[in-house]
Image 1 (tube, helix red, strand yellow):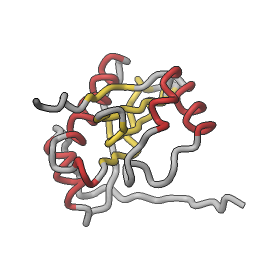
Image 2: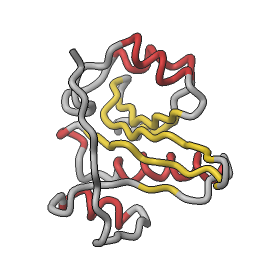
Image 3: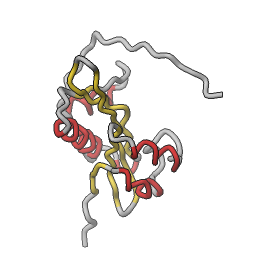
Length: 146
C-alpha cells in the first residue's frame, strides 16, 4: 500500500496548530506559537507548507506589500525543506503555491534574493520559473535583539 502524497497548502489564521509538528531543519529555529499566530493573522503574510503524515516537512514564506505608486509585489523570504524530503520537487511546489497566491492578489511579480554562491537555491529559483540577475547587490542593516 502506497503512502498518500505530500500535501502542499497555504496556511491561514486558524492554522497555527499545523506548526505544532515540524521536522528538523525546515525553519531556522523552533516555531514559537505566539510569533506563528502573529504571522498567520496578518493578511499580507503568506506561508506555504508541505505536510507528510501530519508533519510539516517544508515551508516557504512571503510577504506581499503595497506602495503608494506601485501595484503589489510578493517578496519571498525563505524556503526550507527537511533533509529527508529534499530533491523531490517540494520546494518548487511551495514556491508555486506562493506565486499563485501572488497572482490571485493582483501582484505584478514576485522576487527573492540569495547569495551568488548558493547554487542549490539558484537552481531551485530557475527551475521554478524565476529569472536571475547577476547585478543585484544586497545591503542589510542588522540590529541586536537585546
